[in-house]
Amino acid sequence: MKAETVNRTPLSTDRVLRAAVALADQAGIESLSMRKLAHELGVVPMALYKHVANKDELLDGMIDVVVGEIEPLRPGPDWKSVVRRRILSARTVLLRHPWAPLAIEARLDATPAILDYLDSMVGALRDGGFSTDLAHHVMHAMGSRMLGFSQELFDTNRRAGRSGTTDPSPPTGFPAEAAARFPHLAAIAGAAAHDDTSVVGSGCDDQFEFEFALDLLLDGIERLRQQGWTSH
Image (tube, rainbow, N blue to C red; front, side, top):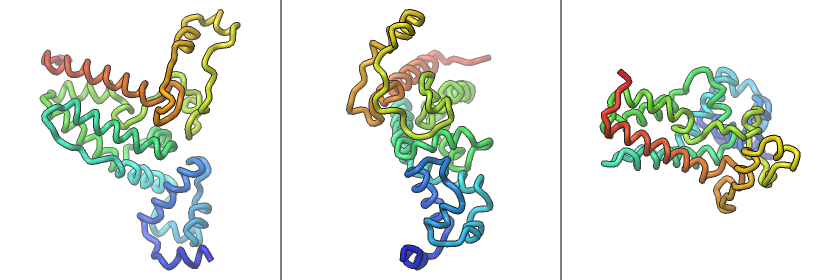
């Protein structure tokens, strides 16, 4: 019955990509296959290849669908507010699609939507009074944070290559033996106090930590802009 109902809607590239995004959201990018996607759409697997040449092209299209959900750039007189607002919009989108950061990192080449997004962000910097030289170095300094996510030092899920959210109830401190061996790490682990209402729950990769680092970068970058900094 499901296949009959679904097949009344013609298959299109957009429909294929959005169905793939939904499947990845539900079960993670690792579980996505052309066969499972075809079953979800109520078609035979070969029907998908009229719209995507292979799984790599499917993943590129999925990334572009996700990036397309980020709010458009809103020009304004304060470059920091413009850039910060859009980065936090990107973060909100990627939190809805926890597989997306790993997929973005895994691609050898940036997709058209990512290139367009980054181009517009460089444009916002240039409109804010940045030289091409400073804008270049800012993009390097920001790294993946410009796209709303960061490669966290203590996020073992991401370092292990797994998508999805981390354990919602991580240990709040070190075992006594480990604390004795690594006292400084134990101290900061015990000092961590995260807001339970954080959009990503407790832990180190939460909204507070992301915004804390983002604001440090933006404030430092603004000082360089005011000083007319150049690498030459």
